[in-house]
Amino acid sequence: MKIYDLIDKKIVILGFGKEGRALFEFLKNIGASQIDVVDEKAVEANKTDGDCVINEPFENVDLNCYDVVLRSPGVSYARVEALLGDKNKISSAVDLMLSTANCVTIGVTGTKGKSTTVKIIQRMLELSEKKVVLGGNIGLVPLEQIESLSEEDFLLLELSSFQLDGLKVSPDIAVVLPIGSDHLDYHANLGEYIEAKSAICAFQQAGDKLIYYQDAIGAKLSEKSKAKKITYSEQQLQANCFKKNDGVCCSVENMPEKQYLGLEKYSTEYKIPFINLICAFGFAYAMNLDFDIAQLFEGFEKLPFRIELARQVGGVEFFNDSASTNPISTIEAIKTISKPFVLIAGGSSKSLSYNQMGEDLARNVNVKAVFLYGNTAQEIKSALDQAHFNSDVQMVGDLQEAVNKSFVFAKEKLIEVVLFSPGSASFDNFQNYQERGRMFNEIVKGL
Image 1 (tube, rainbow, N blue to C red):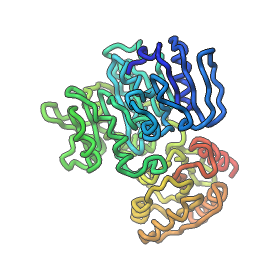
Image 2 (cartoon, one colour):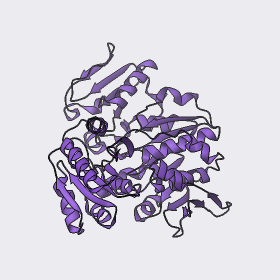
Image 3 (spheres, one colour):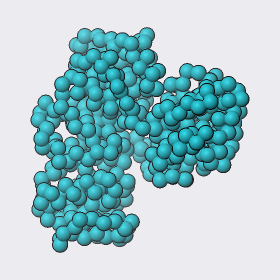
Image 4 (cartoon, one colour):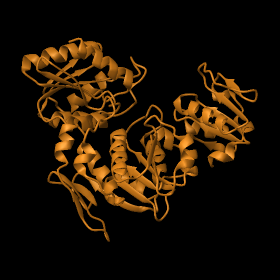
């Protein structure tokens, strides 16, 4: 379904968050005649005479009377599908962008590291003198820019499982970071979560490209794609791209081997998990991009709340990784800390297992204490106990107490780093991880 096919259609938008609002405004601007909005919350829209805002659950609305049902990412595809006789009516902003764009489309997904990897890929393309437009889960909905992109240009989308769920079109270039359990408060189980993620490559054709992490889940996803496949891993293990010495080595049949040297220092300096760099440089290799590596990282700034230095006070560095909303994120975060540190973790539950996180913390000799708060505190402690973690574990009431006590502990034990990497959602006390991250910074500022 292409954007301009919607002008004379009767449309309903389910959910009126950032993406829903962007869809509404764009469709009004191109002359769509009737757009209804359904959202349980009281919302305001710049509607005209033909439009209607319905403030109630969409299950109470007859969706079959519409020509097109535009689903926002937070609205379950399965719930919408169950109410419709014709599921071909379901679309979304991502579906419209991928179906309409005449340029090269790139999608990046995974459980951890999407935003940082997207930012690196964007910079690689720009340094290679390519025009690139960014969108998707990173917070942008560039519908109005789609038609201005030529065949040589790039549309780069960060894609969550919510956005991929039910999608019937895949990007030309699919980039898949490691996938583990996440969002099991939204998806029924891990299998459903992986199935949603698989849409990033399931509809690819010969001539497309798939860059994916070499493990059992990545292999399962790749079976659905007809694209040329490039694998990557931390170790060679027959992967096409892997870590070699302080850089990344890539080799694919009928392509010359290439080594990207000196990347370890950038991983350390910018606290970028090395697997993200292997993935990004696998993309650069697949696309035969030419750029200067030093220039790539010159002035590089990650998005906020991704292992960023919040403050150094009393000889202790506080790192803010509030964007860590699942255990896999915390597992990767602790790999970036090369000296003894204290971990603050916990938050609201997404029905995820913390067993692997517990094992990784137990094996990491640099972890000197863990301070836990929130609904997941007991789950994480149980995982640590099961893994025979033998350093201090302290249960605290809230984030304020966690910061205060971790600071005292770090100073007493001469530990130089406190890492806040919750490994949990934020909804027990905060609206989102951004609000949680800002609160952490405020607390640290007050020490």
